[in-house]
Amino acid sequence: MGLRDRILADTKEAMKAKEPARLSTLRLISAAIKDREIAARSDGGDKDGLSEADLTAILSKMVKQRQESAKAYEEGGRLELAERELEEIALIQSYLPRQLDDAETRAAIDKAITDLGAESIRDMGRVMAELRTHYAGQMDFGAVGPVIKERLMK
View (cartoon, one colour):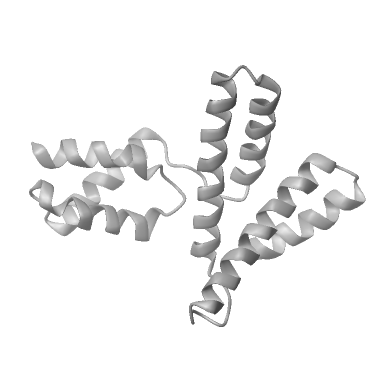
């Protein structure tokens, strides 16, 4: 069962179980996917729809947006709204691949650097591109950038 099918099945299940918070988040996910499909069609993109990698990218972006919102709510003293954002994050992340831990992330970075023969900071873009193709949705690329930079500066 593909990611899109899982989301659709879970939406139906949430409707039947009368879970409004879960249903709301699943509808937001579906809306984001539909928006991206419409944008792809209007740009003359793929007529077959979005790939699993595209869906993973959409979900990753949604998690990042909610993390930023939760942080802003916490700083503003709106803890109930921050808690709601964190609940949405947990649900969205349940559809993403398992995140790599620090050791696995560092091993993946080292492997990419070795495979590409990267030697200087100028190779950072190639290393990032290599990691994105193999580990999309499995690591936080905002946090990976400084680690790559550190490795290439040695």
